Image (cartoon, rainbow, N blue to C red; front, side, top):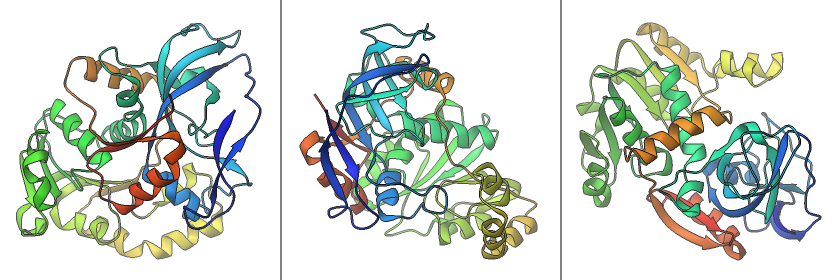
Length: 333
């Protein structure tokens, strides 16, 4: 079968290769999926460039890709909730990537039936952004009436997060560029801030939750806009000590991170605020929650561009450009 593999850390174009390998076999708890579509996420190019080496070092060549939709063509003896021919979607575990391939074998417990009102392209766009958002807002204990700031409202995470927060009854602030303001408003955001003409720090005050999707100064500035005892949930900022332990990082790295994060810790303490870095984990039950929201038409997938499998490397380069409005998807068949 044909598969895209990373052959070393570095630039996207020079460190990926298409290979021919044997079709995977499955264990009793796994299914074999014929891949119909796989979506691109920022974590993909970050892994290629070596940005996540502290968390997990790779042995090359290694497969890439985490979001998948397709059809079950084989199942293990212990798999009872899925059948041959089922149309499914999943965010595969970090230790078994490889959705940019013709077939993939994964544990059945992270898989569920795709939404009945979506095609394979649309379904493949949802798992990572959806699970990341649900797990982030669960950690923040999002409830109706909360005021939430979601950065980068036109991106893959942002487009899902706005819709999800509104489905829970939150008041949503978000940021985007001038050309995307009206489009993002249509997703349901209550106050769309044009970062080219407005400073969100002048507008957003006393929010309950900041969903930090950008990191850097945005993480630090989150504590300027949350209320006392508010919560900052980040998927791009500093790794807090609790998350470092959950990721299994050793004591030396955790000590280094504590020193590096002293400013954020001080800011959080000044507001009696909670800060948490979220590293999403696959979850079949939460995928079912996403399916329910989609089938109830409370959330719709936002697709920016579709690439054929042969142009997956170009799709990854496009993802890194930051120009996408919504998700980028690779059509496998």
